[in-house]
Length: 622
Image (cartoon, rainbow, N blue to C red; front, top):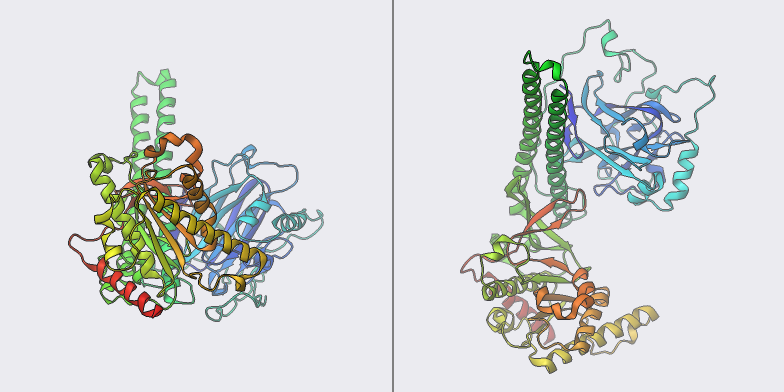
């Protein structure tokens, strides 16, 4: 049975030789791009379009037309390719998809049987769209219904995939889409299946490509790809192959030069899969609800059918169709969630220290690293569809923006159950845990922590940092605040001038080369206008030269400054000391529930780690 996909939904591909059918009702350009695991396309040579119709494993048809057939052999694509994106673009007089019939795309196997289909509804001003994405996960291939449109047309689409000078490239591609003269022979789509096209040398290969597919020379010849109508065959259909079992999850099966990089990419792949899977389920449920409402409204308009009970039967049939669609969507969701949960159970124990939860046994064998990792874990994320399936929130190093642990109540129900003192103490505990992770992730002497606590209200929570020697005692009072801010502001000024002038060797010999983190507690207590200005300067300019900010504050406490501090709050990554749904993913914009990385009750692992960090730092200085 064909899987009718909605936007964001994925479906496993039991075959690797495929035919992608496009029916648009209006001439469109059809093409494909080959991208890496992040969807980035290495260069123009990895775009299949009418002017360059053949790539390793992908063949596209000729000029713009209302119907297209694309040939794909996933076994023949290079090992560095993890995503094959099928794109459609309007040409000629058509300006937007919203004024035309919704395009329809389908993925079929070599025997012509449809595996999955997708109708690209909801398009409006877009003139280019990524219709489908074939992507590799855990050694198996899947298809995802994308429907990602671009009002800026093909240029914006190519720019979003990382290509340089996308406007010139889009113009050149669209120029190849002009239909051929009427007497020109129609291109055989089977001839675009690549067999001898060399791969560009600059794209890394994980392994040699599979042998190229045998070209198909005719229609209906019974070869590997048969383009004849499935209902007009004289020979019996071949017996269908049994469906493959879901791949067994393996930790570190993503691309990357090191295990840490592969695990990082794998976590982000799980993050994206969960986001899109949930989006597909919600979209299917919304579609079922809207269709039910429409059908129920239609039954009410036919007054002649009320007497014989036809309306009751129509309403019952509409509800049955609604329940069937929701049930099918739930089955797909449960299947995908089960696969992701199995992968999480394998990946979580294999994570290195920087990515691991505090209760992971890997912390008990912690040693100060020799080099900085790719990222650190600052909490967990989950969706309401399955709250026990948690995705590690990994943030790249070095930090591109400061952090803000919000000690206010906000809109969190969990925060409303705590009194103000308890909530502020919990916020500072989270900040200390974040600082400890950053310290533990850097080599000895590579990270320095400064603390500002004007009233001394955070002495108990800051004790692990201070007592182990991982951080200097906090600065107190307005004078202490001013001194620390002045020191870090001068550091930022010096480093920026040295970098801009190309005179890094002219820096003072005693300047600490380590990255700096300033923990600000109890803001705005102890801050005057000059100190606030310096704080904003550090938040804006500090990350570019290795000076980072970690605020522990409630926004309402600084309400007296009005909108003056709005840019400060917006420049920081807001985290919470209690679960809250304030973070969004970059793909579909779900509101994810964030959970802070709190230590297990009674755990001493944080002090043990900080003690090792401090010992390594002092040993390096001796």
